[in-house]
Amino acid sequence: MSTLDISGAINFRDTGGLPAGVSRTRAGVLYRSGNLARLDEDGIRAFSGLGIRRVIDLRDDAEVAGAPSRFDDRELVVQRVPLFLGSVASFFVEDVPLTEMYRRLVEDSAARVVEVVRGVLADQPVLVHCTVGKDRTGVTVAITLAAAGVDRDAVVADYARTEALLPPSRNRDVVARIRQFHPESVNLEELATKSPAAAMSRLLASLDAAYGSPRDYLRAHGMSDDELVALDEVLID
Image (cartoon, rainbow, N blue to C red; front, side, top):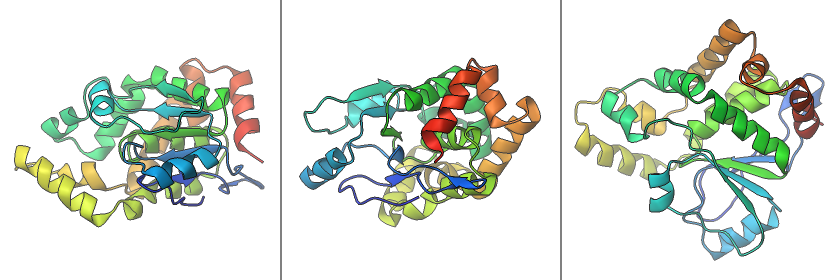
């Protein structure tokens, strides 16, 4: 699970090399990141060199309009799957904890989570991203990896790495900007900058309790057994 230097992008990494029983996830198949709006020329060249065939963008319309992705001019499938039924800003307005945000995501946007996983199956290499690659990307990639049989501790650790990869200057600026609008918020810093392992452990445990496993969660929301077998074959070496 290597972090990649894609100039202008943050939190860009390959999910290859994660333990899955006696096997490991394949390198160069599933990437995850924050948005691609600030790629410079070096970043665009580095991104192009990865050979990515599909980009799955989890942001809402306003986010995409405000920060459109930068790619080169080669053919590339861009799949839009806005994951929140409301806007990202609504979570700051309600001041919900991170665990509640994740609960709503998997309950309210289950069909869209399945869309993301099907996108991973459709083309590889594939990139899944949102604005910073923390929450929407963190949840969908975690469910995808867990469903393919990646060791639970490795799934949680991959999610938790994000917090250390977000630039401190970015975190200070974002928290200060949002704090202007929500001065009394209790959960603001967690929502904007944190990816605690406990939050992902709790989410995956909730899927175990409600469905049997993350794999069964996908099955319950429309994925076929053949698709789930294909997911194993795509991701696991």
